[in-house]
Length: 406
Ligand code: LCS
Image (cartoon, rainbow, N blue to C red; front, top):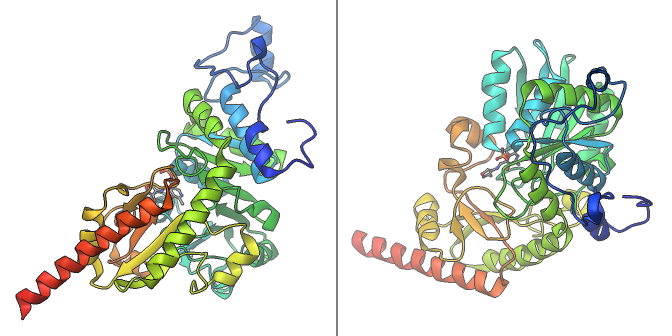
């Protein structure tokens, strides 16, 4: 987008990555092609040699994908972005690009389960060692950094504990030790948090979540700050091959246009629901970045523009009670993933974070009874009514259990 510096984020969501298209098309055309014809043998050779710019093959670059990448790079305040086939393809590409045998990574102890598993299996197999720490405690990050630490990888708020890490402090420490700071910004989206402005070097998202927002795409994105890093990541992505396809990129670009207003509604409704749940007698504990009771509330206030749409809680009665709640909701759908227009509920210990194993889960604060809610954009009164009737069923089930034991 031209002359964008003074334009508000809401406007950028609608216009970013949009160019002049053939036939005056207002939205980017879907170039659903695997390959692009060269004008001549010389043309093909000069494209490959990098002497001329143009499209060669969709794994390398595609105009529909590039339009979506440019849009997200602009929304994140980065230089350029790389579209990946999933969030995990983005995570893999990042570690593939930034580490080699003998390197060390410091990673938040509460991150999306398969990120932990990737570091503990594939990256470990290739000789990359990881120390998992509670990155909400900056001192722990400091202590974990070694001379061979190449990456400090932070997810904030963390999935699913919603613990919040101070990105500015962590970036300062990591940079003193010449380590790169990579932030998984999936839970906040660029509407609520811009890690690059806080000092991060690389930002990634699972596009599957808030950025696309409609639960119909699996994708990932990596945003970088400079051309050299971009070229290095582009080569790595091209070799690993985990690219997004043009149609999914088109859908994500379409989703971005409503990102600002969707995030406003996610935040508004999640705040109302979290405050309602906090007062409910069946709640053992609840965590939401917009509640003053959140242990890192003040860090959040400093670095994000809104508390997001994710809530985690544990009921009195633990896992058993949580299962009754999950089986009793009607509007909330019992499904993994998050960040879509529809509200979802799931159980991390047996679902999204199962692959980590119990020990790593407990070390990251993921208790067996923890239930995670993704608040959608439905009417908040309907969502509360659904939770209310589900919690009523939990109460009835607990009363029955009690009677059996008397
Ligand atoms: N990072 C975060 C914070 C995530 O929540 C996820 C997926 C990923 C990366 C990986 O992205 P994907 O490959 O799935 O696009 N989180 C999921 C979750 O919590 N439930 O299902 C998927």
